[in-house]
Length: 441
Image 1 (tube, rainbow, N blue to C red):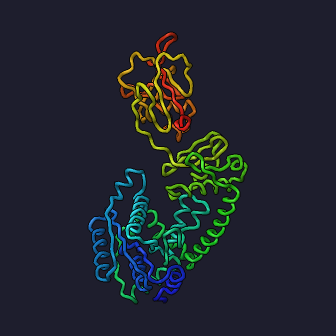
Image 2 (tube, rainbow, N blue to C red):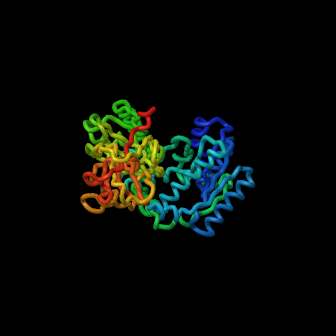
Image 3 (tube, one colour):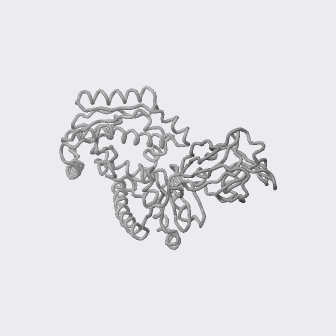
């Protein structure tokens, strides 16, 4: 049995010159400890990073101490952090597995940045690749999910990805590489463990070379996917539109469903949050979105059709309120607002008129707030419902100026005016007008 992991060594030397700084993710298990030993033996300036997920109690404390002490003995720089994966999962509606993955990769990226390292190595091996593809299949996936884990993607490298477990075990024994066992790996409450202990052994009985076979399939699909990505990028050039990304909606609608899904993936992949939390369901929804549609997607991303463009971007955050000045102009979110009394101008999209009687204290202009309600001619409704009935898409709502009096909304530009504060014919009026700041410059 191979004890020197020659294929992994060769791949590393082709990728990185000796002496390159590499951050190694080390859990304390056999795979990551072998990877740490391999990187050091190959002549790389390796540092180790260990994340304590706040799970498994004393066993997790043991793992953290084990990795720390090993690195001290071997003279390997060591960084660690403790997080609350269970609390993070509960607060965001994630599984423990999903939360742990998000926190782990966030920690690794931050550690690499702080240490000034361009590469992060993880101990994924061939069985991990097979498990990942099978897990993606259970969730429903497209070609990207069947590509599995990439051996190199951005700053992440996985030198052991083509290595079978028996070779890793032989290397650990030959070089006396210590490790600890994670008791949670046997817990069948986790989906990956059920695949590892129940499903994968059955497939290996059918074909002992199943892991290598599924990796070959993943490699073929990755090559074909890269080709499709290039073709889509050429056919659907991306434009920038008001801080978001956009492609021609007419060309998008005329394309085949498979290409529309690929366009959605292309746009999502260029979002600052990435597309790791997107699934085939989200891309299918974008592909089938009709004219005037709007979708809220993972990571605070939206997709919408606007003025003949398919637009994808980050949901704007609410803008803090500003006190409307009695004279002069008030600036808020790129708009200039003015107050005037007894104006005869009809109320329109760029101004609202209020009856000054009954207004409580100074007026503010700001974004809408969840839970706010306002009564118009159809009765009291939530601001969310008022926006929806007025056709204001979700991603535009935080930018709609809402006028507040006494802490309560009394008007929203282009949407509604509170029936309690709408002026009657012949009644004195207070008019609030707006214009784009750039128009005044």
